[in-house]
Image 1 (tube, rainbow, N blue to C red):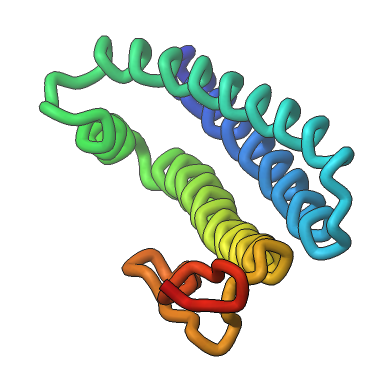
Image 2: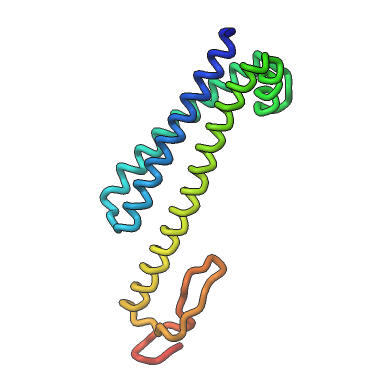
Length: 161
């Protein structure tokens, strides 16, 4: 195996491992959001940022490697061209690594979407509770374009304005 193949394999494996770590953190984040433990979120957020920084660094290294291997216009095309030039066994191994990375990243995207929905739901609950505390008329609620609830009028001394 050439040095470039070994480097690309190593970078793909590292990136996949970090994406899987990120997914684990996102699952912890989901549980933390569901259990309403805001003090634990800070640590998770810091760890997620660290994973993303690591992935970015590895991605830069991969881009540098691929720039020297192909003249295709995009990184994906460079990677695909490089893999296509290899023997069928090497192609199979590299394509499997790419598939594992893409699968891990897709799982992260999906989990991020779920966590985003939980956060949005929590924000709606907080807004509803604030409206109750402020004395807003709960029967006169409407939704904004972002799906948040808002009172139709303001409550002043029992009178709606």
